[in-house]
Amino acid sequence: MRKLVAGNWKMFKGPAEARTLCSELADRVGADPAVGLAVCPPYVSLATALAALEGSAVDVFAQSVHWEASGAFTGEVSAEMLLEIGAAGCLVGHSERRQHFGETDETTGARAACALAVGLRVIACVGELEREREAGDTAAVLERQVHAIERAVPNSAQLVVAYEPVWAIGTGKTATADQAQEAHEVIKRILDVPVLYGGSVKPENAAELMAMPDVDGALVGGASLDVDSFVAIRDAAAAA
Ligand code: PGA
Image 1 (cartoon, helix red, strand yellow):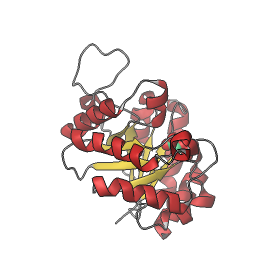
Image 2 (cartoon, protein in one colour; image 1 turned 90 degrees about the vertical axis):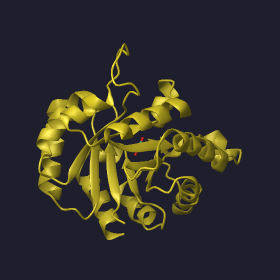
Image 3 (cartoon, protein in one colour; image 1 turned 180 degrees about the vertical axis):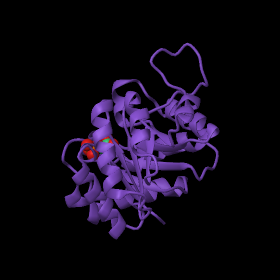
Image 4 (cartoon, helix red, strand yellow; image 1 turned 60 degrees about the vertical axis):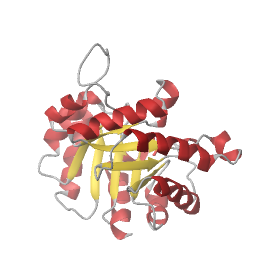
């Protein structure tokens, strides 16, 4: 199966910086389909990213989406709106959404279901906190989170799950390849979908992670903000 490497830009890069990064990325990877590639810019940079990446093999995803088609939901963006501008998909349930913005298993499932229903692709994020891992609860937490997604969404070829242990996000601490493999097995026992690993993925650790049989790609935060490191991770995925 072709691996997928997605760059989660978080709250970095407005339109001007997005144009520069995406143009460089289009020059570097062109239409090469060896690895699925996606970037997830902030909403205000989506249109610029789409224009700069037109004709390339890089898809553009939003970082979240609302579960209603329209309505009084200040600050939110609907799946239809993302579709209208040409976005290929969206993330849902990122741990930063869960931690800072009250996102729950239920809202994550609702957002995923709505996006899939209009034809967007979805990367649904799950992962345990450090104290949950230390308490030996990793599998139970993942099972709870993945069951919530499974209850909300139809069987879909458009769905991908990202395993992102919260203690590894932006910390420089990466799960070992064996820890990632073990978690991905737990997820795949419930949902038969590709599973990406996320959490301090860098060019230096990408090859080892990608070599695991159930690691189907990566969701990359910090290292996706730089073209050289993002392309190096993509190359590691292509070689795996
Ligand atoms: P990181 O972020 O690669 O900077 O750890 C990953 C993510 O939050 O998706």
